[in-house]
Amino acid sequence: MKNLFSVSLIRLLGIIALAAVISFGFIACGEEDDDPPPPSLQGKWKLEVDSEYYDYWLLEFSGSNYTLKVCLTEGGLINSTRGTFTSTATTFTLNLTHIWNNGNEEWIDFDELDPLVVPYVLTETTLTVSGLTGSDAPYNGVWKRQ
Image 1 (cartoon, rainbow, N blue to C red):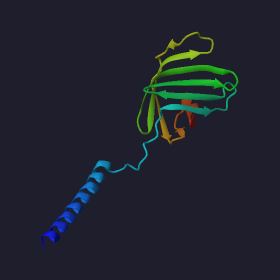
Image 2: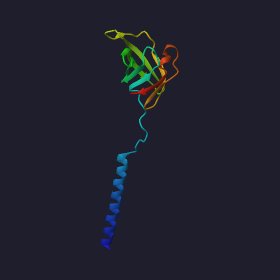
Image 3: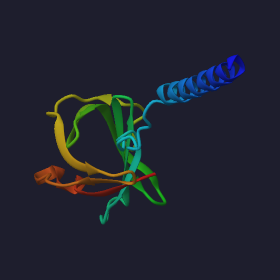
Image 4: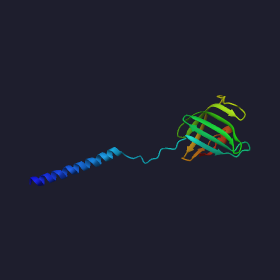
């Protein structure tokens, strides 16, 4: 009888230990987040343009800074602007601080324009800009991640 009690006690302790190991395993792993992180503006974006003066624009977001380059496919950089930006889920705001034109040897301080608020829709590979009017309308289009 004593032997039967010992075997039963050992089995019970074994089951408790196994349940504890499994429980701690679940606690340690926690819940996995199956949702991928949202796409980020960070990186380089290219917009092909139909213009007699230039072929594409290259927009780069890095940290809280941006650079926008106007380029020819075979002639290189025509001009460029840079500054800071902020963003929400549906807009980003460009604050121009410097401009460089082909022929200039260095960046020129430039803060005479109001910030440009740009409505956008973002996926992992595209940045769709729409709703800009007037002289800002050429920025509308589907920018592709580079």
